[in-house]
Length: 156
Image (cartoon, rainbow, N blue to C red; front, side):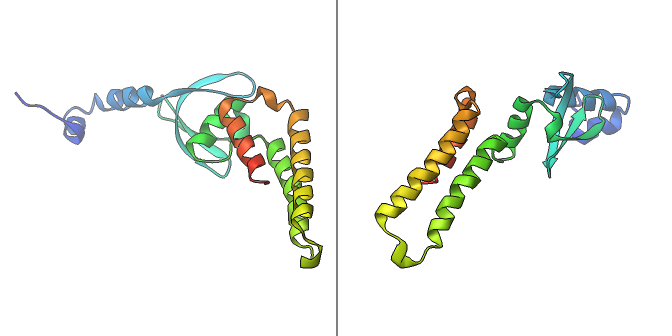
């Protein structure tokens, strides 16, 4: 009995090649939803500069902006590529709160004290918390909440 594996199988039976490749791609395909609610079956094959490359089950590759996908799918791609998953408003709140600490860091040494630093940290945390709470951060899922908490903790 002859067992054919890998490339040898594809050379011997070229008629089966599209079927084999198609079934392999179908096995890796996930459901992706755009902002309009349309769902496609595709495999994520790349992500770069805010553009996701999805390969449809028919083998066609398509590049789409990450912002065209629903929030859950955007988060899934960001997590897979180790990018921040915190919402833009949380990143903006962090930048604004950090600006207070940066300003304090630029003060001359004679104007710095542990008490003054603590006061600035409390102000930065208040700015961050107010911006996050006003946007309904209590509804964030666990992964996003963890990143928002990490941002907040880094202000200390």
